[in-house]
Image (tube, rainbow, N blue to C red; front, side, top):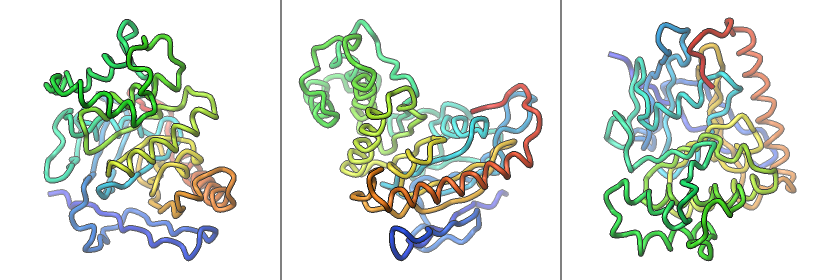
Length: 296
């Protein structure tokens, strides 16, 4: 039987400018982490007969934590997110959320993609309502939809057609739709990557604020260390060829410091960038020629 993997939580640094500790995949769980909310235990995956995309991925996530999965293109981070969401079945290993093994999609864990995937002929209200309709709770829409629209600052747009909205507003609609069923976990597959820099940074901060206010667990995929520093409490860095966990590190920033204008944020981004470069170097040393079945 495969041994369950755990990763010890790094101790926060003495101050925001000192280097945050880095941990590697070791079985050194503390008592507080003995029952993590999300447990990824030995996940390996390949597409068909292609080369392995992921190999022996192990990490835990606490309830209410914001975790960033960082890696360069091709490391399998989006594939990993699909496995966490139950949209694909791993070739080996298992994902548990709470005490429940992930065997398929659920309204308890919701995924946001790079495209908002809205129905253009529908209003904002109708698009958000779909999150409840698919969950068999359409009768709750009259009460719940205004709540989530207020949460994403779109209260005045319920009757507007989504085609009339900006890209940032459309992503807010997609976020409201994801929040409507009141999930435990929100999985983000680079949903802000197509937005302009100002809108992207604004939404990154707002999504973190919303997640913290609701007690949501957030797992996001990114190759942008600035995005990780703005949004996440912790980062897991992946090598590629195949994807493996190379490092697990705390992002020890207070919410007041999560701004590009602060010295602490710039120092933390620089530290993460250096770590990312080291991991990318590990990937370059081990990469094999890309084969059919590779992943992002």
